[in-house]
Every structure is written in C-alpha cells, then in structure tokens.
Image (tube, rainbow over all chains, first blue to last red; front, side, top):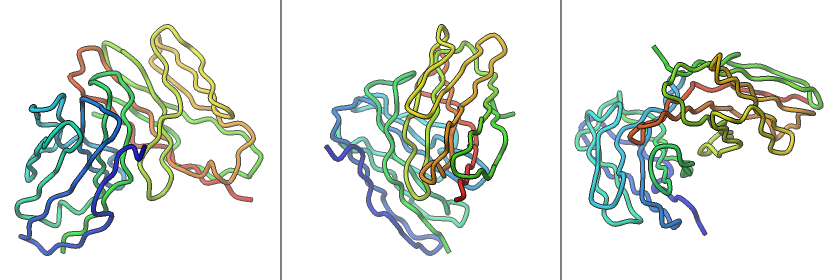
Amino acid sequence: NAGVTQTPKFQVLKTGQSMTLQCAQDMNHNSMYWYRQDPGMGLRLIYYSASEGTTDKGEVPNGYNVSRLNKREFSLRLESAAPSQTSVYFCASSASGGANEQFFGPGTRLTVL
Amino acid sequence: KNQVEQSPQSLIILEGKNCTLQCNYTVSPFSNLRWYKQDTGRGPVSLTIMTFSENTKSNGRYTATLDADTKQSSLHITASQLSDSASYICVVSAFFGNNRLAFGKGNQVVVIP
C-alpha cells in the first residue's frame, strides 16, 4: 500500500497563476483533508471531506477550492495564486472523522513569486 | 489563542540522553490526544494516542503521559538516537469535533552525536 500520495512534490508559480494539487489514498478511507504548514504556525486545516460527495471549509479556506473526485482522490485548487499561499501543503485521510488517526502524505512545497 | 501549547519550542540533546516534551491544551470536551513525529521534509506520523482514561502509553523508546484533570501531556524520549531528530506535534481531538483537530506548533528536537 502506498498510503497517501501527493503530486507534485515541488512547484513554483507566479502571482496570478493557477494550479491543482492532487492527492490520492489507497486505504479505503472515508475522510480526507488538506492542510497547510507554515513556519511557526503549525498545521492549519484548509478544507476537508467527511465522505465522498461532501466538502466543508476549514480554518483557512480563502483562495482555495477543493474537489472530492471519488473516494480515493481529493484535489486542492488555487485559482489565482498569491505570495501568501507560499507554504507546504499536506493531504491526509482517516477512516472516518473526529478522533480517528489521520495519515498524512509527503507534502507539496509551493512557492509563489 | 491556540488551544494547544507546546514547550520547549526547540531543544538540542546529546545522543543517548533522555528528554521530555510538554503539551498543555484547553480543548473541551476532550476525546483523545495524539503525539505525531514529523521528520524534515515528510508528513507527520502518529506515535501514540491517549484517551481520557489512559495516563501512560509507550511506543518503543517513546512514552506519553496524560493528566486529563490538569489538561497536560508529556512525551518522554529515552536514550535518544540521531533518528529522533524531528518535530513532535501534539494533536488534540474534541468530542463533536466535526473533523477538526487542534494542533500544537511542535517541539523541534535535534540530537547531536
């Protein structure tokens, strides 16, 4: 099992460009999450999907959109990238929400110039 | 105000020595507390989970304690190894949390030979 995979690993964008971060899990988990991690800030929830067909905003959703394509895949889209979105992005999944262990992907390091 | 506070922010220890990391939380009602280890450039990986009724949990050289009355947890690393160099993140889950977890900012541990 690969667990949680993310593509790409690194990306550099110019201000105003758009891109989609891809995430897939092979653990048959119901819930999936997108986080960003900034120095000195800890992990912050952007969006989550409690189950296939549902998505909800997290703590810092502005400037992002998500799509739960199917049970395995959950993508994060930046429509018009801004320097403030320079960060490391982690996708995670869990069997169900709440107290269950979340399994994290390796992260995508994004720089917006 | 952050619901999970960790200390010290960073520390350097000699290989073979022990260290203890602290986590104080205000999350309520409490469901469980996890310690995650995050190696540089990787996603976090769960080390231990503790529920309200547990006050000690071990995973190899890692021992976590929980005092639910004072809302404090600690992670003790015994006989540190170079591979213990990482960030250790305290994560607290609340009942009725709607998939939201409260993340600490992490304790950065550097083990030197």
